[in-house]
Image 1 (tube, helix red, strand yellow):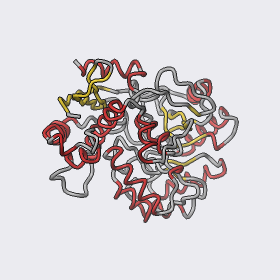
Image 2 (cartoon, one colour):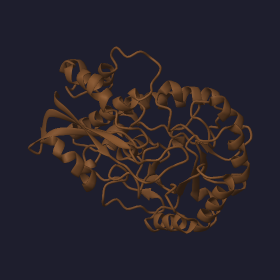
Image 3 (tube, rainbow, N blue to C red):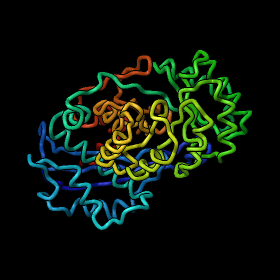
Image 4 (cartoon, rainbow, N blue to C red):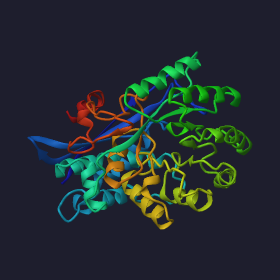
Length: 388
């Protein structure tokens, strides 16, 4: 299985929305296509990948370092015993001459290519990625359905509480029972009104609502918010503090007893391990949101899962950030706790195959070779021209 060509483009995913830290008016994503010499159904197998929202397109890194290294690697050096591309060997080729530490946007560029490699390999095998992962790394066991939640509740210009409630009602109508909203972008008293309004929509059940601060608070603010929302018994309190300040997380965890949910902005196994070692998290209740597309891809995510197991954490505590089909396949194939979903934002990259039904926040995976991009029409419309 040889790589014939690697192509990349940049696609805007701009929107008028904002969270507590950034707006998305200039957000972009890199999309890559890895063309191989394998032919199925009369067409070359092409693997696709892209980066998750919240990080800009790493086109410079892709073109200057990682695409050339992967393209120039000798085919036999990145193949497995069957002659298929080995994503771990390809990962090593991409990371040649890269110093450890300082992961930054490098992890995003590698993650884009890693996604495309797994898409290509599972297409070459003729199986969905979730099935390939289950067979290789989970004793053949894949979940029949995946738990998903609807992420939204962003700050929009002139969006009032009624509009927030209407958005949450829409998610319930789509089949979700668990929703998430942003906080931290307005004074706490105003966010509490928004939270209480959202709770009314989900029937007053805290376990059906998550809140996300996007790392905006300092410790005093995080404690004040935590004290205020603790009686609601929310599903989780997401990323209240700077993602790399593990001591602050440990301090908050001694005070806030309900579940916390950090990790989406940690982009390596080593950073994830530091959070587990020093962040004071509780394996019986807290959630981990490492995003494989942003953190060097599935090859590195497997290392992260091994690390978590060695520290007594279940895979079921992992619910990846990103809301994309790549993480969804990983969740189903490796038995994670679920996956994020973006029903209204970050089109066309978020969401699932077009005919996927959501029932009580659970979905069943289609039996489509690869990651399944071809069954998501608006996304595949972006990818298809890259095959020409």
